[in-house]
Image 1 (tube, one colour):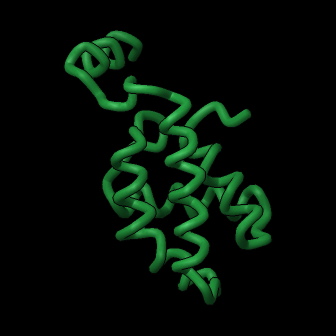
Image 2 (cartoon, one colour):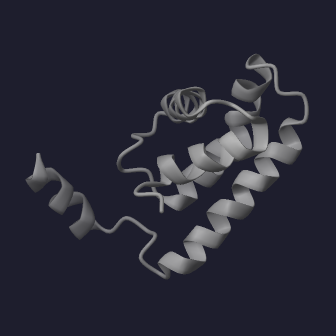
Length: 103
């Protein structure tokens, strides 16, 4: 089972594209970085926007032809995970301060 959203989406990207684990993780990380998001603290809503707006260009640069289909698969995976996570998918002020205390 995936530990983070990065792991979840990278694993699905491997299956959708045939990328190696390293390439899939690097592609997702590059998309997150381009969107200004932290891979460790990204929430599902932000990951969704990254998949819709940023990842297609990353995939195109990696030679993926049907980026729309791949992104649909990733969004489906994300929606499934989000429904399993329940309502704790939004970052609250308490979450923010708890993360600060962990550093």
